[in-house]
Length: 203
Image 1 (cartoon, helix red, strand yellow):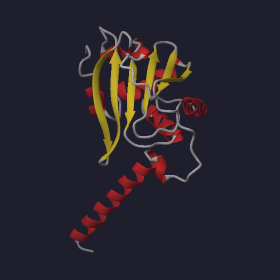
Image 2: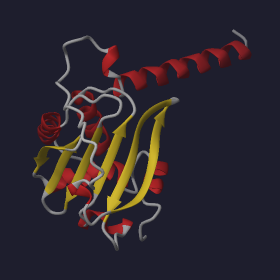
Image 3: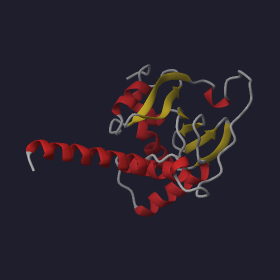
Image 4: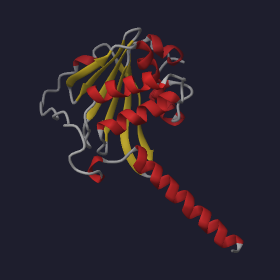
């Protein structure tokens, strides 16, 4: 096998591996077998221009679209109070809004979240299972156009709003620190996304 053929083989192998990773971690619900997902939260059809309650006292600090292998995943927006500083985000009541651009199953979102959280800190399998189940309880399967808002409650945990409706709360401060750290920790796997979200914050 000559060098050109070897290079072509490696290129195709890497492309296949990347494709496999995408459909392992970010599989759209429509590709999966029917009947295996959770019921989605209904999309709010209200036409009022009133500001959502969770946004009161917060301002937009940045927004960015996450893409993977050319696929649009979601647009993330960070809302924070005046005087918010990126270096001490763990002490702030902030809201992370994810506007989904593809369909995903609840258990895939929860599993992927725990994988990213484990890149930030070590924790037991027992805790991972508990956190993943808690996430699956509050997050529905999502469709393109759905919006999930995670609200960081310093020292308390995280509250979730789906399409404008309360979805539940996870009362665990360490969970909340690592969950929001997926986007805001300096050790995030998406530094460009983090930079965009914190673009208008104090440093």
